[in-house]
Length: 402
Figure: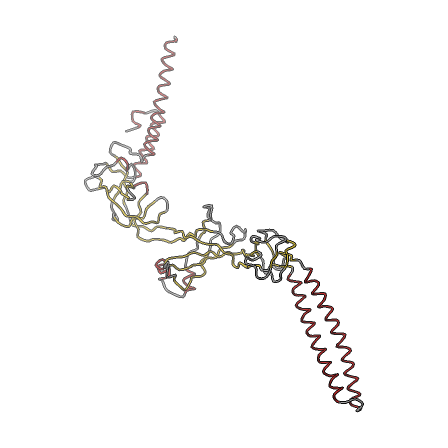
């Protein structure tokens, strides 16, 4: 084979490869645009009434089962932070230490006061006993004996007062160590070491949130609530019938555990016309935090609705249109009204279509009002597409695009 023939064969091979590549690209483009598989062939689909599983999202606020404000019960300077922000704590665990110097001194003084009162009481008790004996022997007067009795009563009162002061001083000394009232997670610290705090401070020292389970609060409109509860029965029975709900977190992910609605407000907000709802979610991994924001995903089923693929619609100025197949095989450009709810693939048709009508479901950007087409089923369209792929693979370019 001479050089001229080799160049001609190589040129032919490259040309064939290029032609096949162009054919594959054209086929892919055709498929991606809705795939009109012939000059006038378009896939159509009958619209039928069916049920649809939908979900509505409601803005929600996450709260712990109990958010407890931690406030000091004595005044003083903070000398120690026993835990860090965000720490998980147990009931009775120390959180803050307030300078106990003055309260320790008061406690010691009260303790000494109790001992002094006890000693005085002992002395006056013995004195009263002695005076009584002398009084019975007519050695001392009634007045002198009564004075001894009164002194004894005063000593008893003094001891009771000293013991009360001791109890208060002991309690105040104990308040210098601020402890957690329950298990939970610590919030932020507005006050640090060296800050002067008192029972009257504006902000609490911190907050302890119980987060083993979490409450999620959201609102439904009065109409939506009536639709959920119109079956009747007690409120408890209605709550038990409500479906489990999910939680969409701030990052867009869906929380792994499902929640259960456990409470409904008995009062409708007159300004918004909404009803407050509460769902409870397990929080074993401590993913949910009190004060966080999320969306409650509320699922429900709609019966006897018409669904159309979103790819079968054309949008112009916020209006949706479809091409409805007519008896003479022409298509009619028809406006439809859709629900705000959708599953991301289909629209729920509220008006503009009837059950049994057929619409073009692909290639709608190539259609126009009154255009005559050859309707085929989605199955036929898929079969033609697969045959075209086969023809391309086998190099049958003459039939690949028929």
